[in-house]
Image (tube, rainbow, N blue to C red; front, side, top):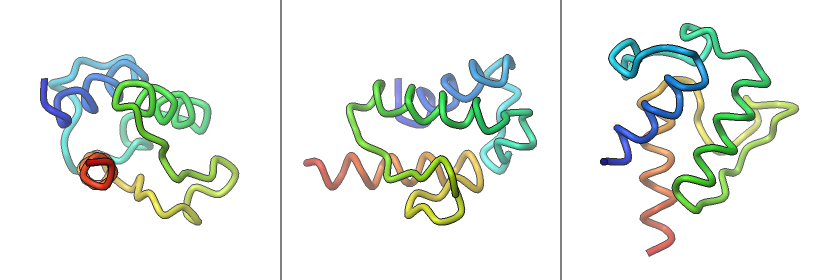
Length: 85
């Protein structure tokens, strides 16, 4: 599975949706993911990809990790994985 497919699967699981319902331009809010679901999604992503997401759960807008859309989350993970190499 690609990074994109794994992220979509994680987000779909948190939103209790089918992966096909998750669009690249969807926001987590669009998908019905609340703040707790966001934190759980971040933990699942960190575990799946063995990365540390620079994320401030108390102020997500202050984070260096862009969570504004599914595509931005995927781009952030790809960048973190590249930096690990």
